[in-house]
Length: 298
Ligand SMILES: Nc1ncnc2c1ncn2[C@@H]1O[C@H](COP(=O)(O)OP(=O)(O)OP(=O)(O)O)[C@@H](O)[C@H]1O
Ligand SMILES: [Mg+2]
Image (tube, rainbow, N blue to C red; front, top):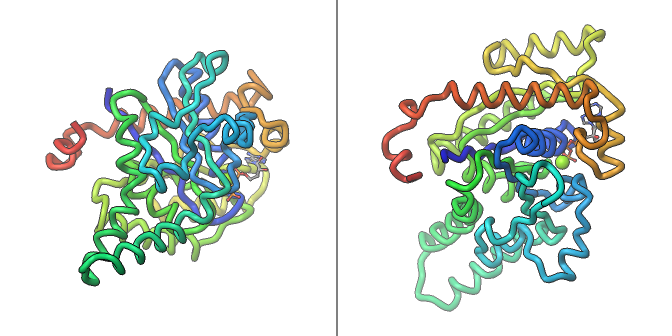
């Protein structure tokens, strides 16, 4: 099984990262694929989106994504399943509000290590990079077991987002026309280039997704055109997710769109997006993967 890891990336708040990650992961599972979702946001909206009680998990002694960084736990040991939902094909690696303090705690442990050892400035670099690659190593435990893994990220370009981009094979940029921010997208792409250069040369843009889209608004179609010019029309997903109160309701009621509005347009659009994502993943042949990376993945 050739597992594909896909991060949702856009540092802008409220542009559809969580809605897309949750709906694609659930949609892939409903279509018979084996899927997993990693909640890397201290807000834990993806975890809440499945109606999972985080406090209950913590009380039961379960691990969360914070343990990936602080305890080097493999994601496969953290995943919780939903035996009676999503055809039993979905795993969730739940988030924790303590993710906020992870960068600080890692930095403190780094300083302590440097103080104790006979170490140099360059050792600090190595330690920092090892921290940045903890998510990647943890997610390797899902390779060969899941078809697709989606990473939901927080709305900033800090440590957690960086680790997601280092761990991922692909990224999707969700954009709400109402919150279009060209400068922000340019900063994002500069960050991506740095990650590609320094850590993950194979990271690729799978597509830009227009969500909260109003087909009747000229502004929305203008922004579609601007994005096509910036990224190339072929990198904008054909499927657009229309503005619908059903998505906000699903968020509030902690259900996925497939459970909240089955067989309605919002669900149908996300299922169409699952097909388009699948087609794009299939269209990228393994022969395009550089040999060194393919060997590393085996
Ligand atoms: N197509 C849509 N139509 C209407 N509302 C939507 C649509 N998609 C998402 N929303 C709503 O917009 C809000 C923001 O979406 P979401 O939480 O997915 O964004 P986000 O990028 O993850 O936000 P954050 O940066 O805070 O993590 C949510 O209340 C969600 O229910
Ligand atoms: Mg979110």
